[in-house]
Image (cartoon, rainbow, N blue to C red; front, side, top):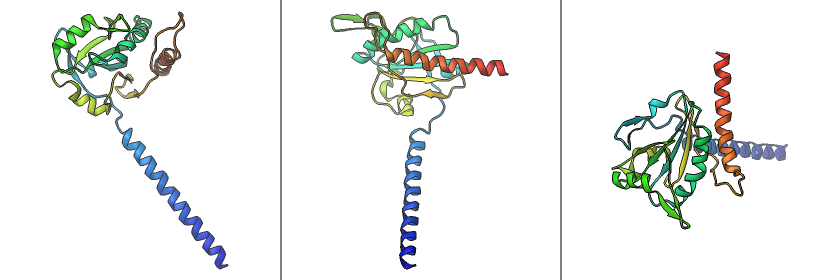
Length: 205
């Protein structure tokens, strides 16, 4: 009888420990993923016009963060540009690139001239994206602290309600031998899946 009580006590202790461990893990996850709404930015575009996150309610928004000299950002420019072209005629999808340089002239020059990688001239973005800047705050702008990232390129997808849909979507990559990369296909599939859910909700309403 005493042996049974000891075993029962051990099982109860293990059960309590397991519950506490799971709770601690769950609490950590909630804390790290506590941000649900997109950052309500108000930033100027290349023409000095104020652009607000609130302006795009009702649309799927893809945010693309970059800065001058970022080689991965330049490499991302081509495949992401192909995806922007794919959605060019779809008014429900908006692409916004956010430059993190602290100098407006550096940003504007980068928009125009891009950079060179592997002896090839590349651009960070194109005219199908709305280009805005965090200058003069640059990387120290509140938006980077809000999304808790310290490297670029960073892509974030926002849904039509202004909620964060995806913090780390698949990374689009350049085509090889005319074949679209798995990353690009998965990126579009993610957007298409959400667009389809919007369409279903609209029909139900």
